[in-house]
Image 1 (cartoon, rainbow, N blue to C red):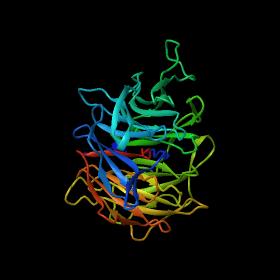
Image 2 (image 1 turned 90 degrees about the vertical axis):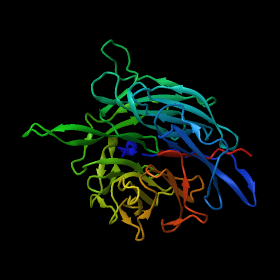
Image 3 (image 1 turned 135 degrees about the horizontal axis):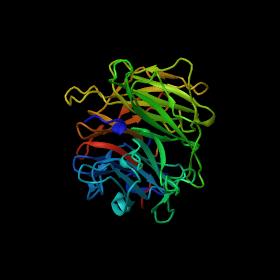
Image 4 (image 1 turned 120 degrees about the horizontal axis):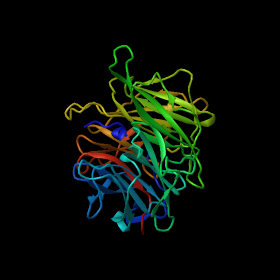
Length: 414
């Protein structure tokens, strides 16, 4: 199965702030708990992350049920105490958002289940303050063929969610919409770390005027400005921004300060750098798209390191588990221009079919979830150069049935 972001799954995932450190002896301690969604059995693989080695150790009673069908993404909020899993659903089960509390030793306890307003949910994100969650649906409730974003407010004590109603738009009956419209066939979204804008990558079907037959979809980016107090999403442009150079946009992420945005174009096997202008307009940097590494193909995920010095593009490769050609291409970021330069010894190999990548809370390790061979690949980052080096005690860890995305909670208990 090949995803279209995760369904090619940016960004992005959320790494929470630490509230404490669980000491395990011999100078080592647990710096966080990792949770990896798996679609084959609708389960969550859970691990402790060792601070000295980056090694992953399975948590007692793991794996856990995802609380629904086809878990594709998740977000951690409220200081790492709550995990929200997006279950995309199946032909026999509707999609949902399952809320879990993170307890002692990283054990998960399911608490509540919520549903988004549209159908076919594909992505979930949280704002950096932990006050709001955004769920991207491929089909809005109005049957227009467009997608939507459902916004939830997060109770800061219980972690429970409550719907945020669209105060700008009313439906035909004169009542406020319960969602925020986006374009057709949305694939993924990114909340800028500054909470200023939310970007959605859409993929609108197109017809060739000469032949009256379907042609490559029109790719665009739908921008909303965020109100960090109310959770409202405000339109900043009359229409989505189209990118004629992009043939198959699959992932989006930004530097920690939101100064630069990077989009993966799988069709042309490139990464496209932008600055963010007024109204959330993306302005392509001089020089245009940057080529992927030789031999790397099908990029479907982008992550930047916590210092904003390096960009890592995850390459799904092929579906051939024996010759997947799956890897990570690494780039340095020019701080003054945002331009990218490939790090010479990249790409770095991963397990087969990586679809997601995340940095640990100590900013020392990176991990990918590999869909085709049900593994997690770990690397340590060389701080000054951005190169990735194997972990000291092995880099490959087993995961439960066809992993999709992974998240980390830095909440640990003494």
